[in-house]
Image (tube, rainbow, N blue to C red):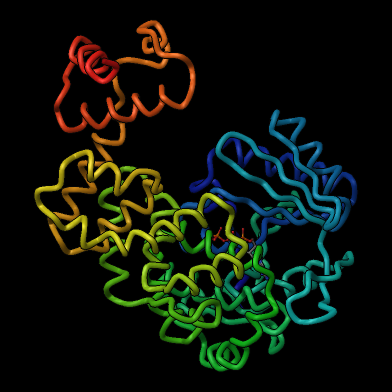
Length: 416
Ligand code: ATP
């Protein structure tokens, strides 16, 4: 029998006092109702690893929604209820607190959303993805802080292992394949040997996962500090081509992701930029397949299409003596993320300089005169006005006019 572990002092050290007081208070209220309350999942793992955590998952062996309501009332936090799974979320300051009823899950078929029914804490922990995410901490008074580790999570944390809880885990829910690699790479852990074998066996099960769920996992990967580590591993294990043949996790991708972080610093790179770099090796047809497979929303889909199309412009962009108006006409209309990705993917300093020039200066150039001004100069409303405004922008881009007076002079010449 492993030694009982109490994490009350760790909770006090690592979580802000107001949150600790809140968990104690809610634990006491639940106990008053004859219920047990637990902190579960990633927060327990992160407490043991002494890493920062912002999302708390609470499990109660009773009605989660009324408890979440109490939590929202006492914090002034925002309550969102998900009736299908009888779960609720309270958003409070930078904290997100999920409250769920302890439950067991069964899967009618691989990749389906689970059938859920109330269950014990051990059922609730057994439905989870990996042993390191399947621990709980008691929040009820008297037992407060006691670690509940039914599946060897602590030992796996110590040994740095990602281990599923049962043989059907990846078949039931193949998003766990992505999750396994994400945690493995985030923590520098390794997959337990049997888990690795089952993962390989079940890679085809990724085909049972809906586009929305795969996209959600992809978004989670792109929020990691170093998403390229995931893609390297996913490529090596053939997980990546199962989503879309042609995607590559390799050194080139790693260098580009690192550059994306540098150019975006101090913010993380926008999702579109990472995605465009990931999809860079794809053909136009493969880009369309990927967009459809993961049901990519329109703006991100546009970025991928733009990036693909921009490849055909790289030769033109490599000319050192491009007139600004010509450069403008080549790059006009492409999304900034696609332009940035093209720049990062190109080794040519001229291409980079041209894109930089467009992104930082040329795309903002507008004539000083407006449509209203042109009407005052005698033009009748119609397409001719936008044609003249465009010609004025071209003249301004190429330095042929520099102020309002010169623009007026030019317009008068054109009207003569
Ligand atoms: P992160 O640190 O990435 O936020 P997390 O562990 O908090 O990780 P969530 O995605 O918020 O992860 O999920 C919360 C918990 O729910 C997990 O710790 C895990 O126990 C469980 N869980 C999430 N997704 C699955 C899944 N697909 N299958 C089984 N259990 C899951």
